[in-house]
Image 1 (cartoon, rainbow, N blue to C red):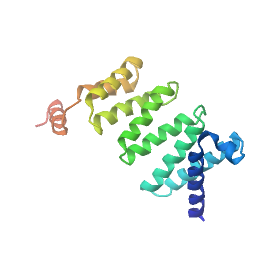
Image 2 (image 1 turned 120 degrees about the vertical axis):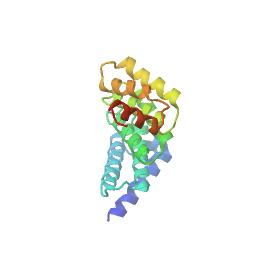
Image 3 (image 1 turned 90 degrees about the vertical axis):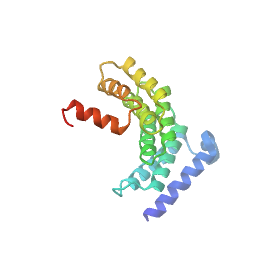
Image 4 (image 1 turned 180 degrees about the horizontal axis):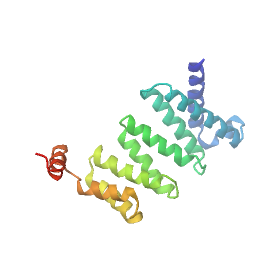
Amino acid sequence: MKYIKFIVASYLLILFSACGNDVNQKTGKSQEAIREELLKAVELQEAEMHKSPELNIAVAGVAIKAYYDFTTMFPEDSLTPDYIFKSAEIATATKQYPQALAYYQTIEEKYTSYSLYKESLFLQASLLDNFINDDAKAKVVYEKLIAKYPSSSYANDAKFAIANLGKTDEELHKEFMKKNGEK
């Protein structure tokens, strides 16, 4: 039964994305009915992801698609920034770093009042720093975070990250050992 629900939800996601914002005209459903169906698809995918302690990449991909479909259809909905943020987290966990970066950048550009905005900026810079290896862009985002939120804990972490940009793990280890008086 769970696989039937999974297949139905996947089919609905494909149908909605193929129809775009005109889906209500093609299906005869109201915006609210479409929203509710997309929310059910998201909930189903979230439940599917949480069934296993290990992240299933295929299920993660379908979950990202469910989030995408909802956020595309309802960009002004209060859930949209959360779904974009969750998409970024899943994309990071599945090593889809450019995709994760794009999600964080969307939050930066369109959802500046989002409750996890500061965290989103920091994670964007961290992706650039640690996984995409673009220290110059990482520094720009870290500096933007520091300028906008100088007293936040993320600003302190950003300052530390800037001070360590471009250093190898070995160099960082040596500095740590030296700082702690160890050889």
